[in-house]
Length: 177
Picture 1 (tube, rainbow, N blue to C red):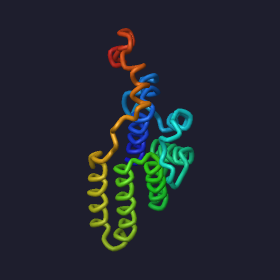
Picture 2 (cartoon, rainbow, N blue to C red):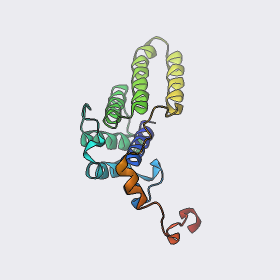
Picture 3 (cartoon, rainbow, N blue to C red):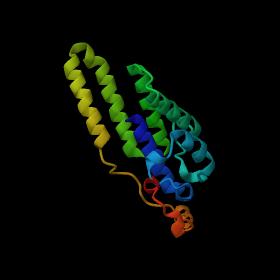
Picture 4 (tube, rainbow, N blue to C red):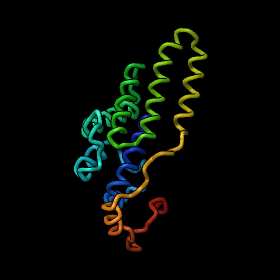
């Protein structure tokens, strides 16, 4: 879930600030771009005013942490609660860098639930498990209600260059089987 939220956050952030890069690479959804690709793309493609200047961490460090989280999830690394809380905190910092308050709130909520798990599991395992499962369900489904979807003027100018692809470029990859 952390990996998915990070991927969605990076994609939405890029869609707001550098839609031309998305169009040029034919990245049409969050799942089309690996976090390691964002690590290589975002720092070199973003305008200077895209990032929150008061963020706790730099973009490069935040993306390094995101890639480590992706690797842990993809390769099924066993992580204890402390490591998971650390990854959630790092993900929260990256969303702060993006000024993505909705996803940042998801990570704050998740971190609080993981802290509660640490205490609750010692008292009543079944109740703690149910509480954490419910929280994960709610966090995963919480809508993106306060994201700033307003395109910036640079994005609007850039996306016009890529908005009308030639007909031969409109091939559905699923039809190639």
